[in-house]
Image (spheres, rainbow, N blue to C red):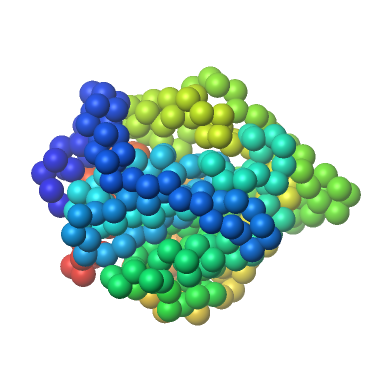
Length: 323
């Protein structure tokens, strides 16, 4: 990994300035916006970053309520180390078409729609590339990655999953009651309504409630959200949560279908996914893994030592070194 990447990984003071003055212009010089049409006619958006002499292509599946530019730092590291990068924005996220009017809502009828969208994306843009193909997925995107690898086991050579949605953390709520309540709301026609406790983007920062430990990285991402209403997705609908619960059940039942070498990195200070279920999942199916006990959900946005270890493990894994 190049020294300038390690310098940025360790940076807190001055990080936002460094990203805006140096990293963003570098990314823009290598970036192309793209559009494609989903299986049901939706217009979906992606960003493409071309390395000058790429040794592989990396596809990133982003997480719940995220958008492509949230991964600017990660893309910079990949691009600087000669990986071309593609980030499709899932339906209902970023500049991809919505299915509900409220831009803050995350809505989908079934995660199968994500898979069908991404299969079209892969066939059109990724399959023709004559290079090794790697997949990175975070959180919901990690769950989608697992489903995608189960359904299309020959598409990617390696996968790195960050805090994947193996099972949603129900916290203190009884699981059966939660499942039944969510399903009932969908059945009664409330699928487009916010789940209890979910709400529109407030415009007020709250790092304590976030998945991030790095204040500078939280500030940087929050500014990206403030600058564009299409980056302000924030709340789950009953339909999305119902689909996510069904998807996570399917993930745990079908993981033996995954053929590609897979590294799963997950955190101890979790609010969104269940770390114990992830640990059991890793052990059951024999995936390579790294557990970061003191990290929050976004391991790559945690304390400097965890950030550096996360990216070091990721690059060593992609480059065929021992993990």
